[in-house]
Image (cartoon, rainbow, N blue to C red; front, side, top):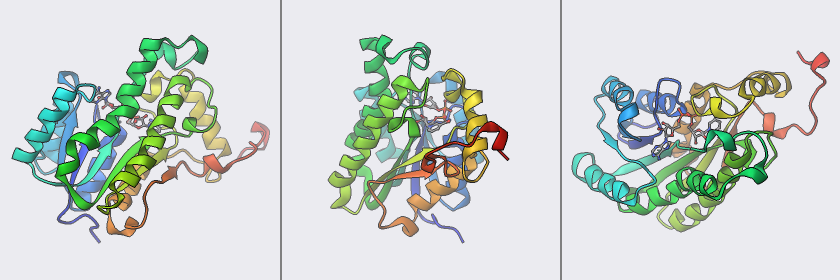
Length: 263
Ligand SMILES: NC(=O)c1ccc[n+]([C@@H]2O[C@H](COP(=O)([O-])OP(=O)(O)OC[C@H]3O[C@@H](n4cnc5c(N)ncnc54)[C@H](O)[C@@H]3O)[C@@H](O)[C@H]2O)c1
C-alpha cells in the first residue's frame, strides 16, 4: 500500500548517498510522494540533482538556511515551480568540529551562534517562510538525537542545539495545530554519515549502541525513512509535538550491560 500517493514533500539535507535525507526521500518516493529538494550549495548540487533525477525528476532549489533572503527566494521558487506542500523534512545540522569534542565550556560564542542558527533556528525559519505553502494537515519533521536530553560525551554543542530544536518542534506544533499541521522530531540512533563522523569517537558509539540496545543492532537511514513516511501519512494523523525514537530502543536503557555480557 502506498501511503503518500498524491502528496508532496520538501526534502532538505541531502549531501550524498549516506545522508539520512537520501533514505527519507527514497522511502517517500516509493510511497508515491512527489518530491522537491533543497540543497545547501554548489558543493552538494551534483549529488542532489542526480538523486532528484532518479526520484521522478524532482526539482531542486539551492538555499542556505542561515540566510533569510535565500529562504524567501526558496518560498517564491517553490510557489512558482512546485506548488503546495504536504510534508517538510528538516534534516540539517552544523557545528564546528572543535565543538564536537573536548569541553563544552570551551565553546566560543561564534561557534554556539552558528550551530544554533543552522541546526535549530532554521526549523523556525523554514516554517516562517513556507507556512503559506503548507496544506492544512501537513506534516513537518526534524531529525534529532538523544544527546538533546541526556549527556552523550563529545556530542557537546550539538546536544544543546538539538535541545533547542526539540523545544521548537513543540512550540511550532502548538502554533500550527489549529490548521491540523503536525510537527514532530525523529530521534535517530547513530548512523555513519558525513556529519556524524565529525563527532569525536563516533565509531565507538556505534559499537556501544549495538551491544546495549534492546534490539542489539544499530539503526539504518532506511529505518528512519520508513518512520518519516509514517509521520507524513494519515496513520500519524493524531501525532504531533512528539520526539519519536528510531534507535533500536537504546534511549530506554537505564543501565548498560558489561561488554562481557553483551550478545
Ligand atoms: N547521523 C546520525 O547519527 C544522526 C543521528 C541523529 C540525528 N541526526 C541528524 O540528522 C540530520 C541529517 O544529518 P546526516 O547525519 O544525514 O548528515 P549529512 O551530513 O548527510 O546531512 C547534513 C545536511 O545538513 C545540510 N546543511 C548544513 N548546513 C546547512 C545550511 N546552512 N543550509 C542548508 N543545508 C545545510 C548539509 O548540506 C547536509 O546535507 C541532522 O539534523 C543530524 O543532526 C543524525
